[in-house]
Image 1: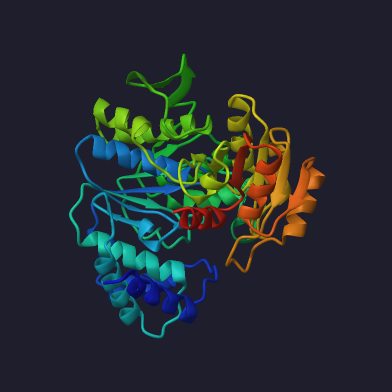
Image 2: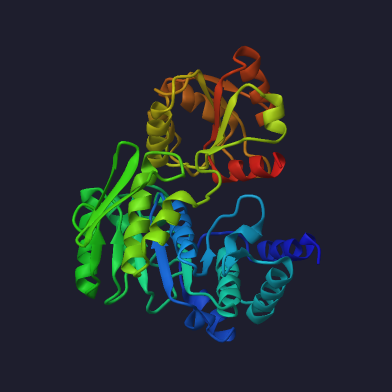
Length: 424
């Protein structure tokens, strides 16, 4: 079958069930019941919530499971280039024929009942994963946790909460405590939870929720520690110490994500081969990804070109730390963001690490922030700011002045997805 067949069904789902966030589980439960409750027939589930680091942590856990000779399903969102990226069955991206079949099945089972795009496609993912043998299922929360469409597993093997920070305030609450409460909604009675480094306000909420459910916590700083020494990752918990390679995913924040992944793998009883694979074989695109080939590189052959999809203040801080750790080089940002994001919070930490910012719109995205607004926010954050009609135009201007610049395209996963599609 051609790729158009699944795309056509997805377009139909989007048009009949618009991509409007309306957090409730009632619609999901109804459709899952019509599908025979596939969520009850999955391999042991590891459910991951948090604001930042969910995808990277999941990628490391998946690499570790596969390094131990086992197989894992994985469900992540959003996708970058193609919807198929969201669903892995026993390690492989879902095939076009399988994706088309489960989408059609879910569409028919749902009928004319109201449901959102994310909800119906999550049900399709659960249905597909229930029909393929694997050793584990990795589920990444889409938004929040308590009322997210993935929160339908009655007894996961393990839950994980990565760092919680301010994001999606219009849906999750306007304080860190409220957002942490939504994330902690994935905790289940008696099920252990690995907790990444958290602000005290968030950790207090998570701990209180865990106590109420009798859910044991494996918390950073209490039950496990991670650090870097002489270019190696040092992980320590109550059973001992592990000296491992530094994570292959770039960025100092990946040490903490690796620590959470290692804590999860050790809880699952997987050995040293899994831990080595987790830090050395993980792949997660558009997270400080160095672009090595493609038309954009042809336009800037002497430049150092990076891509990142982070979009909130915590992501801006992580990016700034990573840029500060790199060898000094003229650095310029090409940035496009959604109008729902805290652009000032994202840009402020980056202003100390870059010489300029060129604002672009996100192609095909109706909620893109106008370039004039992005450029104004950049100027207020301390950048030399510019606007451009496209990434290509921005790139051409930058390398025209500084051919060997370090250039970071950033601000949105939707912008990153456009780059990956267009850059081949």
